[in-house]
Length: 144
Ligand SMILES: [Zn+2]
Image (cartoon, rainbow, N blue to C red):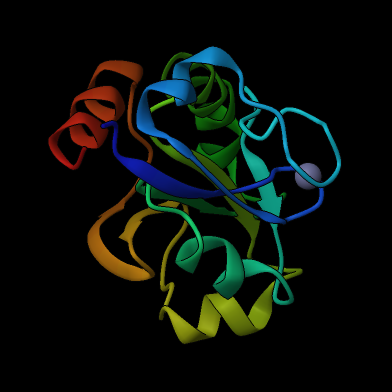
């Protein structure tokens, strides 16, 4: 028997249930038939943030950023790369703090970039400031 986990579709936000080992096989959504797990970080907003962090049994990594923030721009390609490499092990998302002001306030984001790891909707780790690829990868691995 394999372990069944819940993951939220990157396209339609439907909650899907699938065997854990299927996450590495590009699973498709039961509702919209698109890939559930995409390579790029998923942009979240005030409307879908809570649903996304709660309806995923994989850890959810969120990059809180803003368009005017230099270190955020520098880190964006690194974050994109790590997301592409680890998208079957964790969900990678981004929150534009200028757009999603309720989420940014709710999690008390004081400086950006801030990266938060959530498990079952609860914050388990937080890192303020840009990270290089190795640091980010290792930090995420510690939480898997
Ligand atoms: Zn879907």
